Each structure stands twice: as C-alpha cells, then as structure tokens.
Image (cartoon, rainbow, N blue to C red; front, top):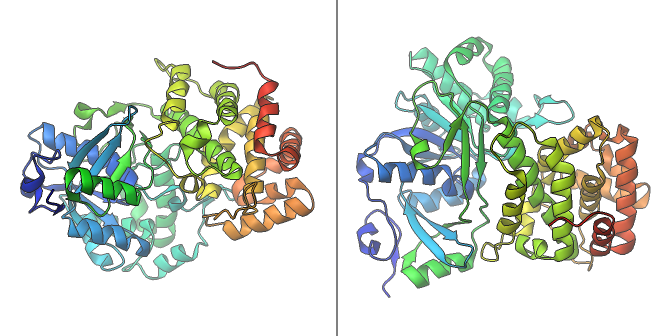
Length: 499
C-alpha cells in the first residue's frame, strides 16, 4: 500500500481509505482561538467543530490553535507540517477502530516564537471565542491561599514584560487591552479544563492578574467578556508509537501525532456567550443554564476514579488503567468509593441516573483497547487531588460521613510519592511539586504518616480533622504492612458487595 503524509495536498489521495473533511477548508473563516492543542482538545472541541463544519453550511468557526509554552514546540511543528490536520482514532468497546481526519484547526501559532502575533490574533474582530485547555495547574490557583498566586515568578515576569508574556494571563490581558483600545467588541473566554466552575475560575484568576497588571481594564472586562462554565468528558490517553504504526499500516496515512480516544464523549456548556457562538448543540453538545451539577458528577466520579485507579495501580505495578480496573479487588474498592462516598455528595442532577453513570465508567475504564497509561493519570497529582478527591472529603466531613476510602487513596499517594512500587521498581513522579512530595513522603515514612498532610498548598487545613487523620493513618499502616491488594480486600470485605 502506498503511504501518504497527512497534509492538505494529500487529502484527495487518502479519501477512499479514511473519512476526510468534506468541506472546503480554504473557505473557513477563523472565529475561535484555542490555547493548548494537545490530545484532549483535538479529541473533543476540535472534533465537535469539525462535525459542525462538515454537517452544515456554516463557515465562520475555524480554529486557530496556539501552542503556549516552549515544550509545545513539538506538537506545533507537527501540526504545522500537516496543515493543522490530524487523525482521530476512536477505539470502540468491541475492539474495532474508527478513523477520521479532522480539519477544523485552520491556523497555528507558536507563542514563544512570536508573542505579538498571538496577542494581535486574540484581539482580532474576527475572534469571537478564546477557548483553553491549559491543564489544572495552568490557572495559577493556590490551594493554601485559596487565591491567585501573585508571587509566581512567571506572573511577576509578565507584569514586568507585558509585550512578551509567558502565561495565559499575560496574553489575555494584553489582547483584551488591545480590543478595548481599538474599539473591538468583547469576546467569550471558555475553559475546557477539568476544574469545577472552570469559567468562574478563569474569570477570577484573570481579574486577579489584571488588577495587578492593568487595573484600568477590570471594568471593561466585566462588561464585555463572558466566561461560561463547561464540563467536558472523554478519555484520551497519550498516543503511542503503535497507534502511529497502525494508522500507517492499515490506512497508508503517515500522521506524526494522531489522537486516540474512547467512543464516549460529552460536552455540557453554560449558554453565556457575548459575541455569538457555534451551533455545537446540533452535533451533540448540550447548552444549559447551570453546569455545576454535571461538573461535580464528572470531576468527582470520572476524574477521581481515574486518580484512584492510577495511584493504586501504580503501587501494585500495573502500567495501564484497564489493567487496574480489571483487577477484581481494585475494581470493587473503586465501586465502593464512588457509590458510598462520592454519590451522596452529588445533588441537583435531574434526569441523571448516577448508578448507570458509575456502571458506564467502570466499563469505560476497562476498555482494553484504550491502554491509558497510569503514569499519565498520576502526573500532576498535586493539582488533581484538590480538585478531584478532596472536595468529596470536605463534603463528607461537613456532615460527619465516612471518608475512610478517600483517606486510603491519600495514604496510597503518600507511599507512591516515595518513588517505588511494591516490587521496588522506580516510579517516575511527574509533578510540579515532585521534590516537595518526596520530601514529605520520606518524613511520613520515617516519623508519622500524617506528616504528608502538612503540604498546605495541596491539603489546606485537612490535618485538623481527627476523623480523617485516623482513617488515613490506619490505611497507611495497612498498605505498608499488607500491600495494596490485601488492604483493599480488607476494605471491601467490611462492606456489602455492590452489583
């Protein structure tokens, strides 16, 4: 089979092998800037936009992808060489593979190379929406301060060097300042990250920065910019070399960075757009008045479930999420955690069957075709625990409900942070706080387990809860003495089996 590099010129040559954009990409007008063109964006928002362009006569919502950070150069170069095209590979539950070339990214910019071009593009009258996938840690929120971290060196740099910023806040501030000075209408800034009330968080963090850098801009932003909350849901593991080879072998398509994902997808969006929006709802998105109940459901069930499987699975020695959830003991522990500790904290979900959703999650986690890497799920846990797990703990402590299973997961994380699995193999802890986590984990192992909870930027004042401390210390000693599997067996045996 003749192989072709994926680019605009070769689309017609692969049209009989794989689904390609049926619309004229040259006729698409850019209306959206997206910051963070990684796998999740390309499996989700870019796909919805591609489907909209494909299924309708709409031509004004093309996406300009922005690679914000220096380490994003690789994805920028690849997508630039492929004219913004990439292949979405959906791994179905039955083991089959659906493939589609996505064409909605029509422009690309590398911010470190030319900051001014990004600022000017964000300020363009054609841009109605700026969307973000900058990871949980990208919002510069300090759990200890419960506020914007104004002492972050990159923030201080941006204030002193407004024309060549490093952070999203520096770019947005300069772009909005330019829109104001040029009399351009406002725009919508929409977070697609896994943060509860992500729109509210984006607004609060941006305004915190603006008050420091451009205080005269605050009033204009409040009047002219909206920040809708949204909930996005699709498991998107890192692309493996085998996926690239499979695409080339089966379809003759040379795509240097395709995207792999599960079949399930969901996008819930607060309908608060100040300057128009795409009709994403005609291709499956759902616009609502209040996203919060859906956000809580996803963050506390799916994202926290991933974290549970990642931390426990890593200690046991598993490499992928499906391996962990298909271990009957870990699966039963996860089901108990989701049903007994998380589900009671979720309210106001009309017409949502939480039992059915949890059941579907277990199936999705167990998709053997996905092979979501555990080290990816465990990365940046210091940013994930405060968002995915600790809100459930706090909710249950407020009403004097059990937190034993969550405490078990936190204890497992403390042991994981020592950097070894139960067989003594090295664990690579990928985390902005990796050094701090390791130092506190060592102290916890040498002195008292609860020392790990002294990391206030992660745990806040959780160390003040005697009930949680007791559950946490019991779990810590159990894992150290018996190992993860025997410990979860004990936890599971003390509870009624959930179907």
